[in-house]
Image (cartoon, rainbow, N blue to C red; front, side, top):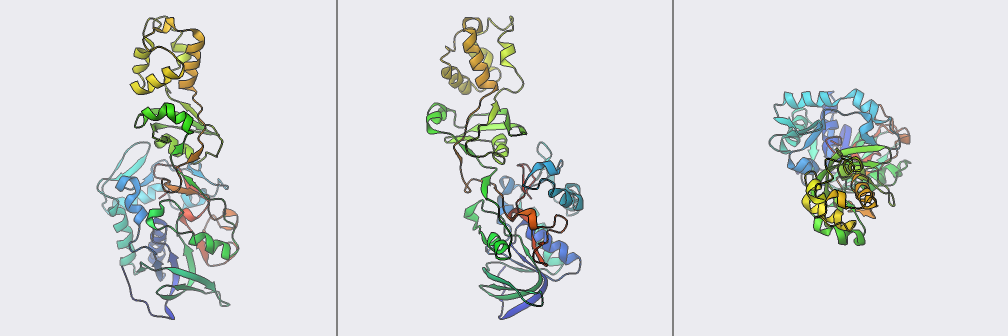
Length: 388
């Protein structure tokens, strides 16, 4: 949508939203339903580009089990107020009211049956019906607040005035979508702190020496339990050409810091220490036994690690070697060297500090009338419908 705008101030709104993603559009729609005049400015030619690619094009729009512990932040209680004010169940009711077909995939994750376009169209249609002024392909250049406590926003297509401004410009993930650090600059301009911003929900890279042994596992996946700090994630792990990915690793990456090992149980439902002592199993070939539970390629690589002949029976293998093998499978502790960066990250960890943001209204405690919402803030949800 490309709307012609005249200078010096094209229009005055009660609320000016900068950023036409999920947070910005939903906030605009909500405010307009309360009788406010609202404008939305989006730097891309199209609104909601990240919505369109989310969930593999099906938009994992929420999770049935959302709670405050599903979010990473320096202020862990901060999400509680937002969740109490508008729950995932209420969002599901909204989806049902617009007759968008959806389904639960697993672990409470809800996806559109057809396409992410259904969610984006719901937001855009809601904005249009309630009179929200939508402007895309516009570059915001400067924000000022005058003595009368009104904001003036200068853009590549003229100036806008507003009583209140909401910054919903997102984070730094998916740079191909034209992301910007503008929201962080605005925060600093008005005296807000911005915490360190790092890629999250992102694949992790292992040392090249380790990968020389693991490269043949690229594409192999298996269910695991990953522990990082106090967090425990049970989901699938995927070996890649560079390291580790899959839902379990993406979730763990939200808490991972450089130099920190992961604790991975590659066989969550079997204690190999106990199994190897079971008299009824000791006559089995080690590879045949492990192949029941793990991908064959993974079994071969782990046996090679411990220099164990795959054709040996369990009872023929020294106890010390069996113990080491059991530990490597049930308690593998690789130490990633880095992430695959923002180009592969689904979200940004960190952002505008919550020290100076009201948890009830998302209004700045420093600048009345200035609000922040969405990924620009230092609140990041788990993988699985917690970031919409």
